[in-house]
Image (cartoon, helix red, strand yellow):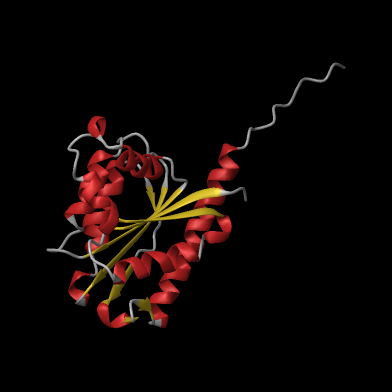
Length: 191
């Protein structure tokens, strides 16, 4: 498999962050596939919020948007905030060209304080990437605050979901590689 650009995005606007720890755990499981970039919105949101449209982005914010648009694989995580993803994450994707993520595989992840918010990935994040025409990985990863020890994932069951999601992401990238190869054309043989 050729080198790919894997971009992890933590929608958390706090540091330290369990969401960042979860996204880092997922991208660490994929780092052998290519270059890994971790965007933490705690750092990037102030630059992104200085523009309301992609046409007025600062150079730093434009680099962030370009990194997202050119990713071969996205890992997107957010803390659950009022039953959805953060406004910082929403603003980032408001700036991303709607055509740029067509077919891009996306691993969905979220963190929250209660199991009651576990379906946020299905009801909020998955439709967002459906709009972009992305290919969301079937296994989403949701972790509770109690699944972490010092902001590092410590629950084996959640780690099993991470492993399953990364395996599915690998399959998706491999399928993309196979479908991108030119199909050999049989030339007629003179008799």
